[in-house]
Image (cartoon, rainbow, N blue to C red; front, side, top):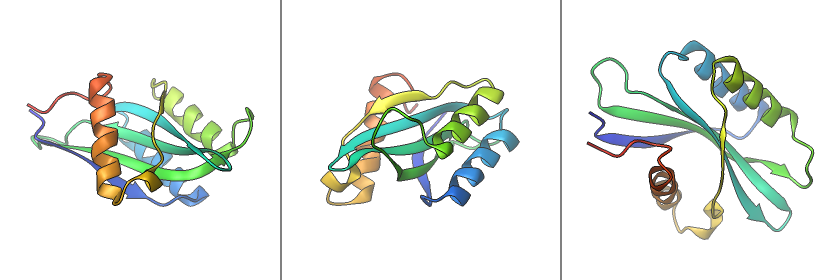
Length: 131
């Protein structure tokens, strides 16, 4: 039974992507799914990298770790951070779902962006409904 799904924000830099990849590797048995969330900006597409994990032990909390909009992609060439994330996910058997979203700057608060994103992921059956 999952009672709560929440984003846990990491930073936007290389070190943060490495941390997210390490979380995926060290918790591969709990990995639910990986995501590449894309949004349009005036200078290209802003990419967020995220990984959702099953609740720990008897917990009812599903964490979703995210590096929010730290990668700006202006063309079809994938950045090194995106490639690292995709390779790590594939090594543990996960193909990242690519989802197009509104940019977080559209929302008055970051928490509203996260509620919107969880709703989109649930509607597309990429996250389980709360039970």
